[in-house]
Length: 160
Image (cartoon, rainbow, N blue to C red; front, side, top):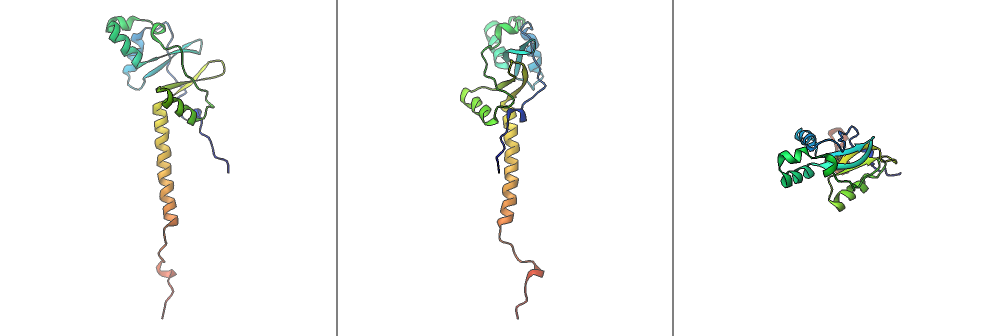
């Protein structure tokens, strides 16, 4: 029996909100304000060119003040050197990258750096929770199979 390998494609978010380099940080602040985003890929012509994080925005606000930070261009603040993965990357490898490099997301790109999605620590945590739930259920089922079975009333032989 061959063990299956989970891939980034099994957990990644495909419909990703993106920014362009020309957008101002005020837009990223509004998007982060929705509460469900902490990482925004920056694209040019569909290709990944950078990433803006909530931490980047906060750092800029601390250095320049709120009003000035919000007027800065995304291209001036974004991180350009990124670690990325392909959709076919084993999930174990992506998890290793998260822990080894202490990063919160990995943009998922195709061969030509076209953005295909994003995988985050939260995606990995949700997947891990599902696996642990499945493991708990499997363990419970196996313990029921291996537990000594008490004979049922009709299984007992009368001893006289």
